[in-house]
Structure formats: structure tokens, C-alpha cells
Image 1 (cartoon, one colour):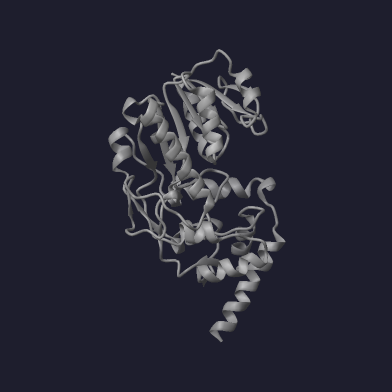
Image 2 (image 1 turned 180 degrees about the vertical axis):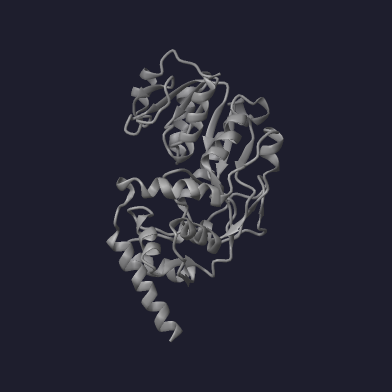
Length: 337
């Protein structure tokens, strides 16, 4: 198999790239070359900006691929440019969409691929849905060989999956846990969520590559494990060796107060994480019969937390998020009083 990944060094794509490298697949990454330090030996790199269509066409001239996957396409203009670049040059084009595009609020917590795409709270999700619609139109009208993949909350060694954090990443939340300070959890912490380790996602994704039954299909890839947001935070705290000190705050209040600090939490909360979701993974298991997510969240955190703690470059203090957290604490204290 000869494959091209546009991007290939993010949380999701890194695990896929590593597994394909170990399998000896002929893989090329097309990216700007800013995060290529950990690329496996044998994986080739074309350094370029996919957003510069003219330059990209020159760099890709004469090349064909069995599979092209774009991990950094977010709006219809991105996939339209990909269509022009790869029409007739690949047997399968995989667009990485998002499970956040599913209907919000959900009519049912059970989500499968027939659930409508409708998210009035998050433009990111609506843009992904528009990309899907455009690509499926090309599949239906002229047979453009597209596969649509919808990840949900996927994490890896360097990413701790949280619902809320500041613009400097997750470290400030970790620091608050370590210091025994209260940690903001949206709602009452009881909504169900699915977190998927990137190595598990990679197994499902690789099974879709070159799979003729996946052409023209939409499919999500998630773990079957369902845990609450309180459990997620408790597991993180346990791996840090501390006790969780939660402060439960209504999502509407988080959104309202967040705006004062420049945060837009409406999409990530009302458009995604506020709602309980239970993903029905029957379709990925039909398309990839040996797929199963085997990394429990506690097992994943047993790897991720030591990784994050051992890397000072990930320890970015965030004064704004600290002030935001303390402001919410004061508001809730006043309300309780």
C-alpha cells in the first residue's frame, strides 16, 4: 500500500503513522515540517503547505497513491482543494471529520452513523459537516472514492483529555489538582463520555485504509468504555497521587463567565461535552472485524501522566485560566452561602 498523509504528526495521526511505519507501509507525510522529530524511519516527508494549492500541485506532480488522508482539513475550501489535487490520483480519500458534528442536543444518547449532523452551538462542527456533505456529493455524482471518519475525544501520551482548560493547554488544571485547589467540572459531573487512546483509534483507521467496503461510508471510531466526567477527573487525580477536589458549575455559567476572560466554551460544552453520549461502534467492527479498543482510560492515564510530568516543555503556566477558575469558585461560594 502506498499512502499519503496530509499532516501526520498530530495526536491522532502520530499513532497511525507509527503503526504503519512498523508495518513497513510505503507512507509519505505532506506537511510544513515543523513537528517531524519523531517520525519513524522509512516514512518519507514532502515539505510543503497544503494551503498553497499551486505549490502543492507542483510538489505532488506525477505521484499517485492508494490512500490519501487529510488530518488538517477543517472547512469546505480545504477539501475542495484536496479534490482538485487528488482526483484521479488516489483510490481512496479519507477525510477526518468529527463526532462533535452529531446532533446537539441529542435526541438519544445512543449515537450511530445514522444520527443526523446538526450542531447549532459549534461552528467547527458545522464546518466539518459541510465538508462531509460536499465530499459525499462528489462520491454520488462522479464516484470520488471518499471515506469519512469521525473521531471523538482521542488522546495520547502528551494529551490529558479534559473538558475545560485555558489557551496554554492542560497544565494549569494539573497544577490545581496537585495543589489541592478546586477543579472546575461542568454540570454535575455525571454525564457519560467516551475517551479513546490514539493507538486504539489507529487500529480501526488502518483497517479502513484500502478497504473497498469503506468507500462512500461514514464511520466513527471510539472506545466502548463509558465513564463520567467525575470519573475522568478522579482517574487523572489518582495518577497524580492526589485527591480530587471538584467544583461543579453549570455549563451556562461557565460559558457566561468564560467570555469575560476571552474563552469561548459554548461549542466545546453545549456543542459537545455537556451531553451524555454512547457510541454504537457496530459499523467500524463490521468494516474492520478485528477492531477492538483495548486501552482503558486508567491504563492510558498511567502512561500519559508520567509522560506529561517528565516533560517541562508541557508545563505552561496559565495565569488567565487560574483567575477564571478562582472567579468561578467565588461565584459558587456566594451562591451556596
